[in-house]
Amino acid sequence: MPDMEVVTYRPKPQEYAWTFGGVRPVRTIRPGTVLQVWTEDAFGGRVRGPDDLVSRVIEFPFVNPLTGPFYVEGAAPGDTLAVHFVSITPSRDYAASSTIPFFGALTGTGPGHTATLQDPLDERIWMYEVDKANWTVTYQASRGDYRVALPMDPMHGTVGVAPAAFEARSSLVPDAHGGNMDTPEMRAGVTCYLGVNVEGALLSLGDGHCRQGEGESCGVAVEAAMDTVLIVDLVKGVGTPWPRLENDDYIMSTGSARPLEDAFRISQVDLVGWLTEQYGLEALDAYQLITQVGEAPVANVCDPNYTFVSKVRKRYLPQVAAYGGTHARLRELAAAYRAAAS
Image 1 (tube, rainbow, N blue to C red):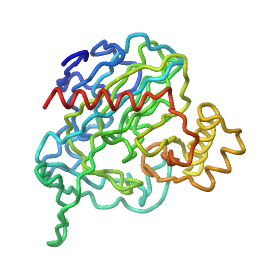
Image 2 (image 1 turned 135 degrees about the vertical axis):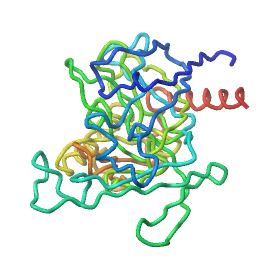
Image 3 (image 1 turned 180 degrees about the horizontal axis):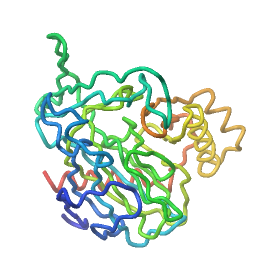
């Protein structure tokens, strides 16, 4: 493809990463590279039918495998990695969801977090038919005959870089480095901005979902292996304290913490900071504007940290191109890639 460096990578099972940080890079890439990657589902491909209960087929902590990490040349602490999702496509004709003992928003989650005396919920598997021709997944009740086709909205639940200070964080944990944020906003057409903490950034991704409701209440979306195309770029000398997203209509800040209100506060404070740093608003003016036009979908209320997204429509903001117009430029590269590939 003219003027594009394209790297294809499909990991073998022994090459999966299970943490952000503490893992050797699988490839070195230059800014502007198009990555064509495959990611395994959160179950490691081991849930293939209704009898494959997670407690039987998966040995913790080997859950939520990652593809990567990718070392980005020139990336250094204080920079921002820009990850633009060109396409996210299920690679199989099935996907799966489940309930898992002591996991999810509506159950006790053990002595480490929400301790209760209740018994665990029943462990069940729901298999979904993936119809790429009609771009749907089919829900089938596990007790009864009800079926309904749902529109696909593929996303990646887990995207991030290595954290700072020599840390290695489980692929299940979202935080300032990104990780398992589980926001449906992480779909094709979005640019994700991640603050670089270590040399090379060390980008990894995984946890593809055919679709997910806001909050991911039971803790498990419609989990699927994905064929994903992304463009990785670098914004030098500009920091990003918490993961941010941009699409054609919105800018978005994320926050991950417990309790949930602290995740909300982090995302709101980061959005105020974004408007002051790049859009020229004074802090209290930004706070006031966000209060009146902001939207705040919950990403997850099930992971070790909860995640909130705070977002504002661009039409309400000063006409400034965030990150020097990175999103628009990567959109143009994505369009050129698609044209060359067709």
